[in-house]
Image (cartoon, rainbow, N blue to C red; front, side, top):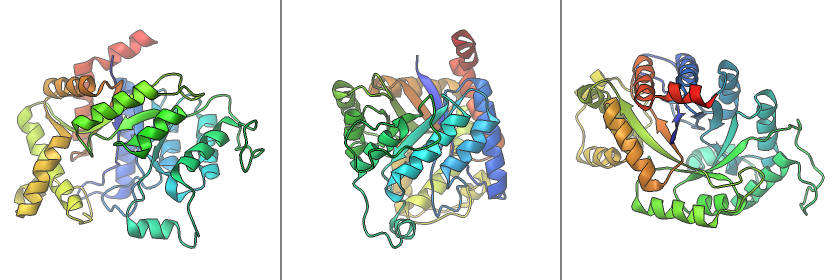
Length: 340
């Protein structure tokens, strides 16, 4: 059985605002919980005018309180900018309030040159990425027996359960760390759809070392989706996504997620058309039956345990309908009941 998850960017639709977007994310999370989705993650996006999720830990606290059983996580925290100790404290606090429901997704992105400069102003140097992960694990577990430069330091509050740790990426350091440190691994198909990805995941599974966080390897893949009742309606909705992504991929910062009407009026440059064609390889567009079929193909290709859907299409009502259609196609509610 493949678990289905959601990564919600908290999109600010054309004609809307950040407050509305966060309210819509809350409602989508509640509905995903009711429908039987397994995890609900939010990203850390800085200087992105069309996205309301800039502080995932704060949004996670709100979403975990607004839902009942779905796991809530970060997709992911940009740890190069922060103190491992403070990250551990934040996630121990989340775990204390919502035990066995918290995921710490870790990312190596810096968010761009200006964002990185601002978040690290006056810092003389950064810890190596691997050291940061080691430190986070040490502080989350309360381990004091092994040698560490802050050996007796404890992150509080002390909790009986631990958050799950996920390394996010598309190969490189993230995979190696997930293997060596015994974390789960989320492969970013939506960034780098590639046959190499299957080899990366196979290597992770083969060399995985069990840890206190995970006894066995666990793999998720992330993909953009646009879901509607008919293929034609899904293609219409995807036009807004095409415009939004074309803007992002050509170094623009759109002030909102465009409507279909706005997208239809847009004339694209040859570069933008090229970007759109490339983007289409990173997404699934269609009716529930088609999207389900493609998800299962992807899961089989990558040998993934879970698939994380990124429903970046316009309109809160459309996103609610889309995740409901797919949940019905996968019979998630029936599976949720049988698992209880």
